[in-house]
Image (cartoon, rainbow, N blue to C red; front, side, top):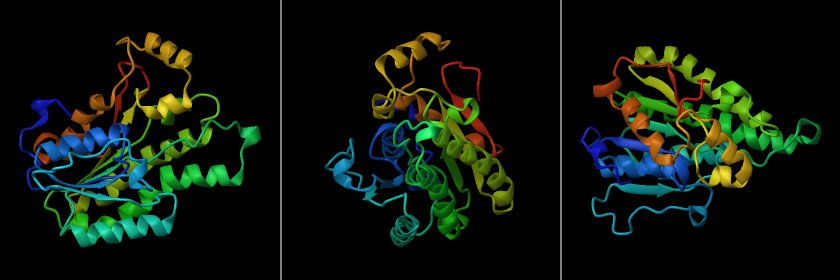
Length: 259
C-alpha cells in the first residue's frame, strides 16, 4: 500500500482482523491497517501457500500475525475464532472479506455441492465468525465491523453468478439488521459494495472482453483497483471519522448507479 496519506495513526495499537487477506481487496486493506500501526490479524485463506501477497518479511513493527482457515467449514471458522481470541485481548475492527464465486454456474447446472460451497463461504462464514467474535468485539470501546458485499447484490450479477450474488445480497441485508442489533453495544456495522475491481477474482471469472466492456460503461471510464476500496474501509472502521454511521452499504463502483 503506497497511499501514505492514509497513515494518520488512527489505528495505532488497535486490533484489526481481516479475513481473505491473502490477495486482492483483503491484502490491500490489511496492508493499510498495518502501515498505520494497527495490530493486524490476517486470515490468508485455507493455505498460506495459496496467498498471492505476503506481508513484508521483516515485519519490523511486529504488528502482523497470519492465520489460515477453511471458511467454508463451520469447524474451520470456529477454529479461526478460537485462534484469534487467543492471540488478541480484544478486537476493535473486524473486516469480513473472505469470499469467491467458485465458478460461473447456470441454474440448470447447479449442484447441491456448488450451492453449499458458495453460500457457506460468502454468507454463513460471516454469521458464524461474527457470533464467535462478539465477546472480543464487546471488549472494545468503539468496535466496528465492515462487511465486503458486491454490486451484484443489487444488480443480480451476470449469467452464472446467481448464488454468489444472492449470498452477497444476504450479507447486505445482514449488515443492516446486525447494525440495529448491536447498536446498544456500541458496535457499528457497515459494508462496502465494490463494483468490478481488477483483481484475480475477475481474471478468473470474467473474460477480457467483458472487463473491457464494463470499463467502457463505467462513468469514470475504468475498472476499480483493490486500493480504491481501502480508504472507505478505513473510514468506516475509525470512530473519529464515522462514529455516527452504521447500517450503511457504500458503493465503490466508479459511478455505476447501483448501490
